[in-house]
Each structure stands twice: as structure tokens, then as C-alpha cells.
Image (cartoon, rainbow, N blue to C red; front, top):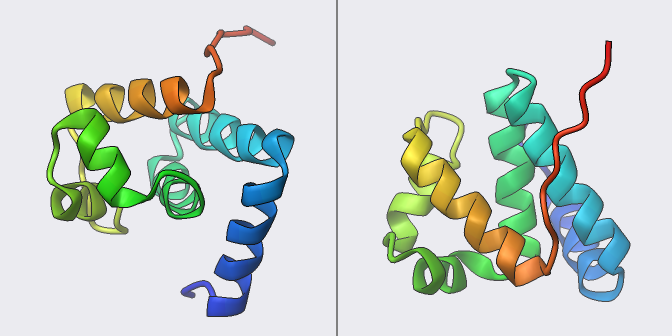
Length: 105
């Protein structure tokens, strides 16, 4: 089920004013991807991009055309590992965070 405009606007507004929320959104996307839920991870990543740098801004940071980025992070998209790494590195840099891996049992 697609997200409603109001929900997306709520995420965008909160992300604009709450750095902890933005970072939690990015962290959730990365954790979902690393734990094997690529579809949901891409959806959260797409929401994060829309709420923060936008696809045009991400294009400038990755040198990947915005339309390609939108397709990759769409429900039927299949980003290569290289492209996904490039996207995450650019978002990490723009957010000013580092990714670390914590192993749990």
C-alpha cells in the first residue's frame, strides 16, 4: 500500500527539524538492508532521501542520474552493490554520521 501524501509530508517536516529522527531513519534503512529486507530498506531509504537531500542532491553527490536513483530505490528496483554503497556513502557524508556494525546473537 503506498504511503499517503500526509504521511510523507509528516516525515519530511519531522526530518527537517529533528536530526535524531533523520539519523534513526537512515540507520533503520541500513539495518533493514543488512538484515536481508532489501524491499523495506529501499522504501525507508527512499523516504529518507525525499525528506532530506532529495534525488537531485543525491545525483550531485553520487554522479548517478536522479531518475536512475529513483528507479533503484523503487519497489521494483535492483541497485547493484556498488551503487548501493555509493548511495549510502553519500548519505552518510551528508548526514555527518559513521556506520558501525554491532554484532548480536
